[in-house]
Image (cartoon, rainbow, N blue to C red; front, side):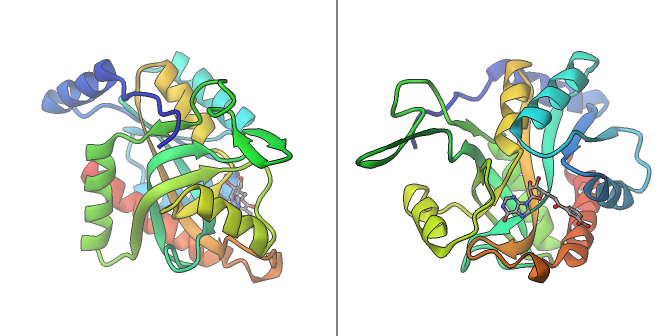
Length: 235
Ligand SMILES: O=C(O)c1cccc(C(=O)CC[C@H]2O[C@@H](n3cnc4c(=O)[nH]cnc43)[C@H](O)[C@@H]2O)c1
């Protein structure tokens, strides 16, 4: 996988150590208020979780996450919300848990095609999720009877709207299960603070030709709320 940032050892150690006596606080970052409300509905008032609607896109997500972490402390940060699912991997109404958060359109167009920022020598475009927690979350979601897929989740500045772009993204990122617009920004901010990051998406639409009227937003928000209830068990 191109240009990965190594997991932060202090973050992993701090998360585990804090969990031995009292569980650490968890910051959940959504884009919009409706996603925040769905997460809060699932959490049922747990005081260990702070849920922030930081705005859409990586800049708002990273700035909001960094500001919240500066006022911390937190043991874990989760980018959560609705997202597009890659057909055949993450159906509408299902959940996606990221193995890594990739800035999929950060780079340059060249006559030979898209080149990522990593290929251009500008550093990483991928932040790994805290693998143990991501795997535990996916297993708990599945055990609760929810449909869940695990794999890279792409962060894009422009939501995919054509079959051609969907195919190009899938070819560049084999196994990518979903796309959204904030995960990489949240993860970069978390990594800067040495804190473990995750991304959780409830699939509202397929990645492909744009049909906004067909997005299943209420169903996705219900799935997000159901997943948030499982977070209480896992974190
Ligand atoms: O209109 C509403 O009621 C409503 C309720 C909840 C969320 C929304 C959004 O529009 C959220 C925007 C947010 O969604 C992510 N997203 C969803 N599908 C995709 C996609 O196919 N490609 C990229 N991003 C997607 C994204 O993270 C946006 O920030 C509306």
